[in-house]
Image (cartoon, rainbow, N blue to C red; front, side, top):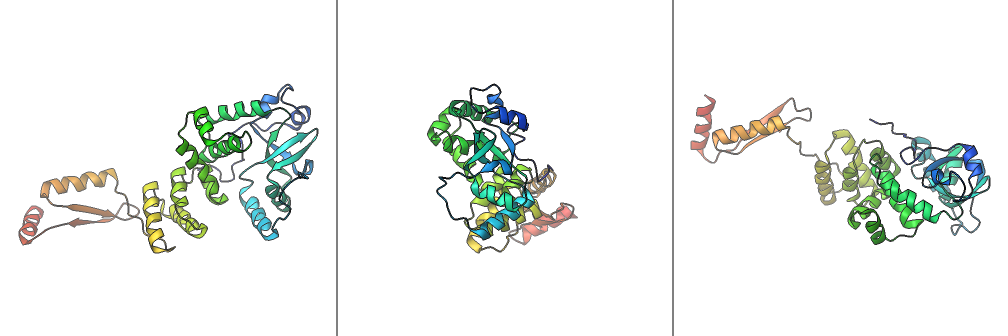
Length: 295
């Protein structure tokens, strides 16, 4: 299993040194193409809020909760900063910036915007999506940046990268998951399919309940979907997932069913080492037929 606290952005680009960040101020500067589209670690003391930030009130309790999450998991989604000589102005992510300060972080992962870098950034992001080593959350974050920072519509983005619009929509929905669940997807503890099953539940409480059950019982995506459907009908109480048979047990089940010409069901324990054999019969004649084969 990958490290849960995987460094954000190493899949999207190399972390550049401070000298490069100081010398590069515009998209026309040498080396700008290596900076645009990647994630860098920026010292919090070098960052300042945008004076025109529309949000003026930040709930202290919510900031403390986010700070606790950041201490545990790190910053899941980088902030976006505008380069201002040797300092950086916040474009988006002031709440994450404030919570990171509370958490005691010295640096924060960030996307850096430069003067006249619009076209360069779009090219970098579109190229980035084509890579094979990105996890589902990194892909969703890249889609989000193309929509929000470049101003593409989902239809434009679909045409630009050759992906169905529904694929983009489903990917973006993963960013609605809690940081814990997003991080589990990033570390391959669960899959994006599991994430979509969790998202089918409306409340965060139910989502966390299903997430915990997926981890505890090692549910497949199909099992998670079945449990989610049952939870929507029956409330938040965890629902037992039907154990999927191994290929070995499926073969035995079919062989017995063909031999006896009746319905045969094998039920196994979670470990697969123990189980039950259920033989269906319609009348006493069928039962005697089964017994004759056993004898």
